[in-house]
Amino acid sequence: MRDARDVIRHPVVSEKSYGLLEDNVYTFVVAMSASKPEIRDAVESIFDVRVKKVNTLNRDGKTKRNRRNPSVTRRPDVKRAYVTLVEGDSIDLFEV
Image 1 (cartoon, rainbow, N blue to C red):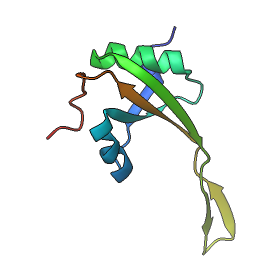
Image 2 (tube, helix red, strand yellow):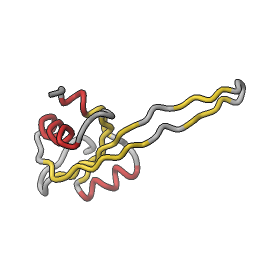
Image 3 (cartoon, one colour):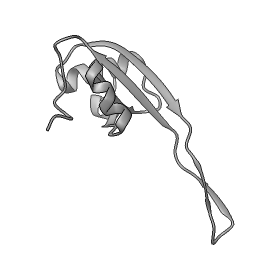
């Protein structure tokens, strides 16, 4: 079994992720090879909460072009996890 910090990379800070906080859903960037049970165990062990549901999403990296050089580069692919917590549990990660 992998370390929990290797599975969960960092939280996603965006308008959509802040909007989902009202529904007790937290968004994280996770390792590409992470499975839903691994993500569930990692979140439960790091933040000491109970996880109700985990949804994952694979996003392809954007292709970027350089105007000065006729070269094309590609940003890395990213896997996100939308983690729904049990009622009453919360993560104080985004609280001010």
